[in-house]
Structures are given as C-alpha cells and as structure tokens.
Picture (cartoon, rainbow, N blue to C red):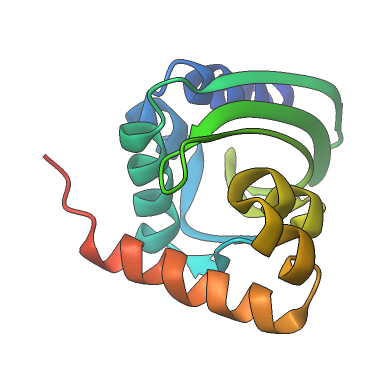
Length: 154
C-alpha cells in the first residue's frame, strides 16, 4: 500500500499527464471533493469531474509542491496552467489543497483558490467585475455542474 505522500504525488503526477484513471484510483469510493468552481461533489461525481477535466485539458501543465502529510491528513500546493476552453484565454491558477485519508485512499479533498483572480484570467472583464461575488460563484457552480451532467466518457 502506498504511503499518503506517495498517494498525493501519484495524484498530481497523473493530473499532469491527464491520466484520470490513475487519479481516481487514489480516491476512496466515498470521497468528498470541494472547490470554488464546482462546489461539493461526492463519490463517482467527484471522479467524473477529474475525468472531464483531463479529457478537456489538452494543454494542462501541473506543478505540485509543499506536500505535508501525517497519518490522517495532508496538504499540498499545486499550480496549473491551461487554456480555458470557453474563452480561449490562458489561466494560471495557484491552489492550496487539504486532504483526509481513509484505508489508504483520499476520502476528503478540498481545493482553495482565489476565484476572483481565476475569473479575471479565464473570462476577462466580466470576471474582473463579477468574479469576486457570491452571485458569480453560484452561477459558475451551476454551469460547471451542468457541464459535468452532460459529460459523456468515451
């Protein structure tokens, strides 16, 4: 069984290679994922999100660092660069992740990033104006979850 550090390294290395199968193998079947863009996703829905992002992220570049782990919890910093498909704009997102582990898998994964900064890069002037509002966050989560509902694995 991999150590918790190896689990986190495997997860982000797989993301950098857009290998969703390897990523989701790190997740417990009852995983809870949460971030500002998607909100809270559980189990297979969280795994489906990574499958969708790996499928769509053709120019995804990932760098991870500062992994801190104990027997039950962990954290890491990761940065991702990609082209936002809806606008064609370049995005560089800086993310802090928190993890909880159960039975050698990730049971809880929370990503935190500056949504206003992300929106400014991904959307442009509308993101600059609205990206820091609760209204924008709610609309974004509705849109991302609608995309997730429509995503069909090939």
